[in-house]
Length: 245
Image (cartoon, rainbow, N blue to C red; front, top):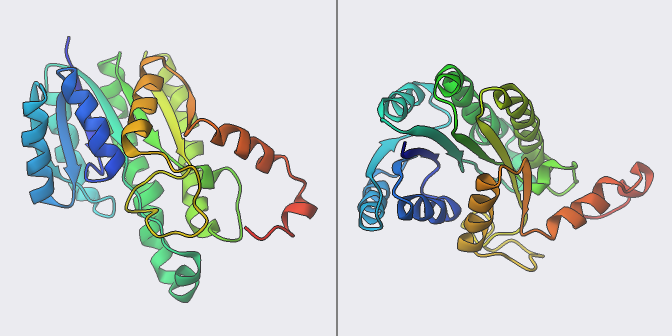
């Protein structure tokens, strides 16, 4: 049976690269996001690259009414269903502290919106086994840092959610991959100070695509972030509180 990918946040740079890989393998792709014109162009590109079908659809993580039509479209296809979550926003910590009410929207974009959609998808994913869920979290969720704990908190929540979802779906032969990007050259990171060894969206997408194929549980992008975050997680709290990042 062919495969079908519902790609949430499809206008992001990593999602575009991921969609191209899915299209090249002849999968059905549903490109979901807020920018309809951009999604339509991406759908045309996916068809040219070999996608079995390509459909642009509206998705807003803050609008739960947009979730069910996406799932209806995915599970109506005669294909093994998979979902990739790239949606998310990152607000500067200082700006977030100036406008605390903005936290709710960022939590919805990064955690509660995608998590709610995945919960809604559970029964059908279990009935059509063999697919995958790829959830893009962040290295920022591994430990709360003074510079971006507002962003790191919902990412930590999403990481924990994906871990539990992986355990739940393992018996149904549906694999769940948690992706933890570090610095990737995207609109979200453009202009941020202190970036180093930035990965390209294409390289990031290829790494997560291979990890999904190999049924890895968690993958850092780029890979060296595993070592960096292992060190950071093990720094004693009394030292960590004095660090300035």
